[in-house]
Length: 262
Image (cartoon, rainbow, N blue to C red; front, side, top):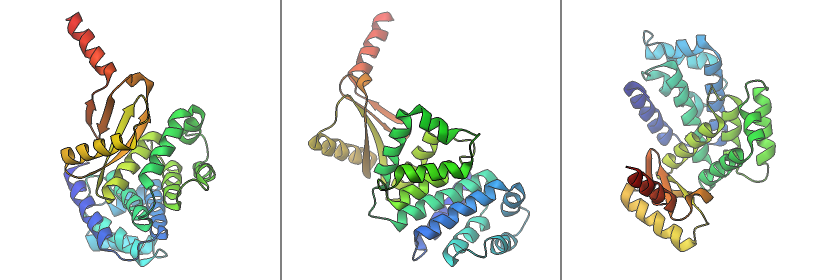
């Protein structure tokens, strides 16, 4: 994301933090706005036009999204009043606000765990991943499929996030969408997500020790997502964003083989 977009997103996120009475309806409206702007090059161009004044861009929001709640309209007006590096990054920003709004609306739900759990289901089922990622099917039908799959097993916020994202993937892979959403939800809760690959399930004591150690290292609360991976053999492989901490036996053996070969 360009520097202008980074600043614009920060301002938009601050506006969300200052807003009151954020509900799932607010998140739904923001997702709908992201879809509408993404589907119309004319609208996205008008809202991201650097030659137009902020007031002119806000007037477009009022004209197009006048039926939305005051909260959603206010957030969208904040978005378009900022300078974005591109229209695509502005759409990403609206989508991120929608995900954050869903997290705000249901603070007690385990959104990170639910999103991660669904991503593992997708990873383990190639037919489901193909169905959700295919360009051939009706986009809204994909959202309906997600709603049926998650019915009764996930919070309304998670269902909204996943169904909205797969309905308009914008050339992104399903697992990429889910991974980004998990990071955004964690950020909204001021947490960092760590994906832990292990050959066998961690005990509660091990999870606590690992979480505490990573929290000290990354200076913040760390949320653990656990992946059972026989290829690890023993030990752990931990990934946080682009950082990888590989203490697995398989990694040590690979390192040893490389040294012997050299």
